[in-house]
Length: 390
Ligand code: FAD
Ligand code: DHB
Image (cartoon, rainbow, N blue to C red; front, side, top):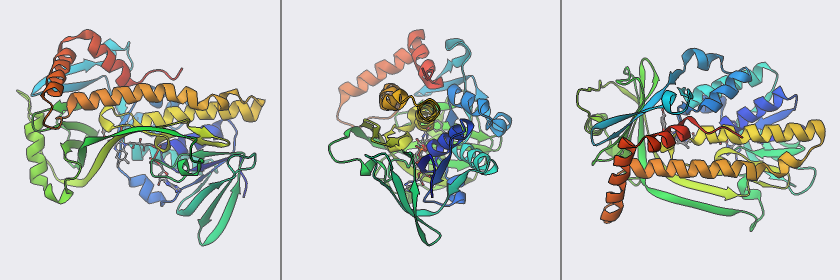
């Protein structure tokens, strides 16, 4: 088997990359360990930055998102019941976000790739990039009971945080930076009309809560939990009780409904530098993780592969290698900006561990500043809708 770009992973990074390469006339094969139905139903992020939606629309895969996604001109930040709207339209000159589930983006991209005759090999086991330092890298894998070797010009490691690609880079090449947060999120999907038109991020003494949306009939909600807590401790009644307490605001009521999905996630920040070695380029969660409070993970993955696709087009079409040489540096500027924003939002909105009253006082001061300062609201809006790629 042979292709120009061998892509490991059919998440947002791998699928957007394969699609952008197709638009450029570059051949790719996507190797995914899970089944198609698994990746199409995996519930994760839900907020697309302006730049991400623009890209999907411009490259012809934004049709269903335009019809079914919800465009939001603002977001609410709430501190102990006091709600403050961050007005994107006013603060960013009209940039906005679109609320559209990650699994819907994934479904649209898979359909587009397969319709265009693209190759996505689902349920492929033991993918292993080889010879990445030389000019003829390959990916060994097992598919439908047969061992294969895919010869490529370059390999894109789009296989998420727990993937294999980062691990084949020789020891000593990568510098790794990260932190674990003492918080977890319990996320639920409920079959009830959202009680809000725009997202509500709430700090409350009992912990953070987030009210997001999926459709006129589906609400997506999160509560801060202890990361070592057991999901079995969280009955539907307890989840709604905490959501009611933490999201409460004068004059506002929240309607409850059946919970159809429930999962817990730990929160961490992570970056590896550089994001490339030889002919292997890492993109998305394979190279970096952000805590979800800024809604950035999927957007960062899309930004990486937009830069990578352009660099690959310059190389394949014009023999210009400079974009590939600079790939990591170009991505990392944005990655660290987003790390800062995601960390700031996380520390602003979660109840911090006990025992550091100084940190809690500083947090209260930051919350007051967000509530009262146009400059601070401008900063949040600009980062939340997403900074331009260049
Ligand atoms: P992924 O989406 O992880 O895709 C990687 C793909 O590679 C997967 O399909 C995986 O099956 C495949 N793969 C892995 N290993 C191999 C292998 N060895 N061989 C072949 N294929 C392989 N972000 C937010 O903004 N808000 C959220 O609420 C939010 N919730 C999240 C919840 C969870 C549980 C997780 C894990 C992430 C969440 N994120 C959230 C982050 C966001 O979903 C990610 O940043 C985004 O999915 C990154 O896309 P990606 O394509 O880089 O990686
Ligand atoms: C959603 C997830 C996030 O992490 C976030 O910051 C906002 C919304 C969501 O799933 O809708």
